Length: 131
Image (cartoon, rainbow, N blue to C red):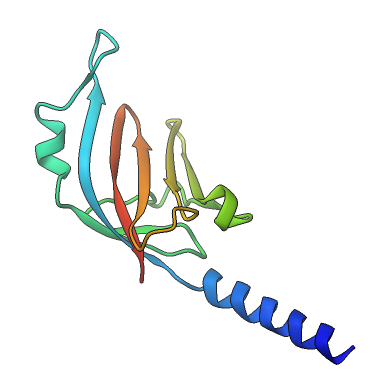
């Protein structure tokens, strides 16, 4: 019984420690969809490359050069089994409908975790580290 209690305590500690880490992210690439449905990054990438932001794991808010919230919307996090599914934050804006989607591949076994961020017709990618 003592071993079971110790095991449960260790698992709880690992989960709460892992769950408290926020992310510090840097943009390495960006692209946009043109009027013909093609991905192009002539001007988009140069505007975003090198941008940084921090993601609050609890709220899903992106704070920095890129943001996913305002007075009309706040993100909702989907952070179930991050070691298998990754971290997700979805923001729905109103009254003019728009959706932002942030996905961080936490399951990647490297210090730098790849991310994708989709906002309107712009796709931004890069890496995040625990912060």
